[in-house]
Amino acid sequence: DLRRRKSRLNVPLDEARAVPDDAAETERRGREMLACVRALPEKYAVVLHLHYYEGYGLREIGDMLQVPAATVGTRLARGRARLKALLEEESL
Image 1: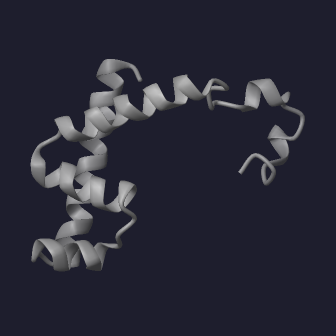
Image 2: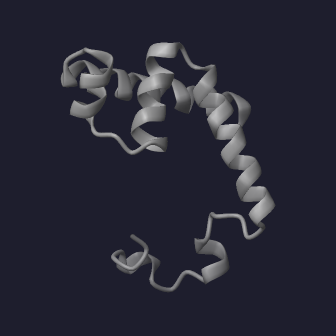
C-alpha cells in the first residue's frame, strides 16, 4: 500500500515500518493478540480463529458450525469490532 500512495513515497523506511524488528517482540505481540481473541465471547472467538488463524472461508466456517455464511460474516464483523475495542483498552 505504501508504494501505491504518492503522498508516502518520500517517507523514510524507519518511519513507514510499523512491524517490530525483533522476532521475540513479534512473537510476544502475536501471543497477546491470540489471548485477546480468546477473551471474546465464544461465538466470535471461534469465527475469528477459524478465519484468520486457520484460513477458512465464510462458507466453510458456516458448514462447520452449521450456520448460514451470512451469520458467519456478521459474527466476524462484530468480533472484529469487539476485538478492536479490547485492543484499544489494553493499548496493543
